[in-house]
Length: 277
Image 1 (cartoon, rainbow, N blue to C red):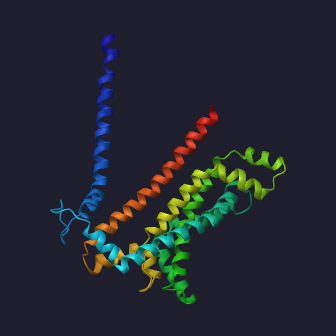
Image 2 (image 1 turned 45 degrees about the horizontal axis):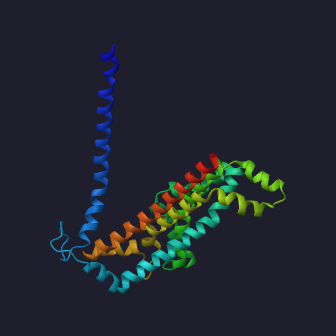
Image 3 (image 1 turned 135 degrees about the horizontal axis):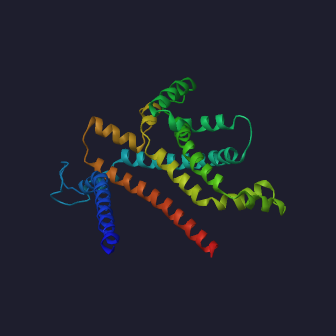
């Protein structure tokens, strides 16, 4: 009896160890290219050699001294910040209406608003090129702003809409019953309650614009260059070792945005735990 009751435990431990081993190998496989790029960026030679023979910040200095790379980097940050802000200003009210509203055609409106997330980017870029060429917007920052906002808007609607659906509606009703107007209740009660979702949506909208290259290639023109477009042109026309430094900076920006999302999530969990006590 004791042998039969004890026999499943080794099988459970072996299965758990195999699962951890598989997970570790998968993570290592996914992170290996990123680690190689980061290490090679500190190479002192003009060759893409791994591991580096000599360690140096040579390519980071070259990147900073290059006016073209600096302008592309600042423009990408400026554009992504504006896109994240515009996506939140448009997407939050839209998500609230779709989550709380009951009107004919709501499902159709939701499908149309999130359709840029489903449609292939190349198809979206071709359609926007045909539209913006008639409006004379090709090669202008306005075209990139509108296109990137269109692409980032569904991300905000999906994330914030899910938060609105999980939110207890009695909180808003209690504020309204105490005399608060709808804008006041929305600003002081509803939005603080979904603050982690707002931070997550803004971060992912920022990354959507910051990493986008297909729309920029179609709509940016020769004089408007973002950092991903500059990387694509450098890969196509020359092999500049500064690419490893740029790629490392992109990785750092992406990790920083994801850490911001994780901090917002942990703060929400801690706040809910304090409220439960």
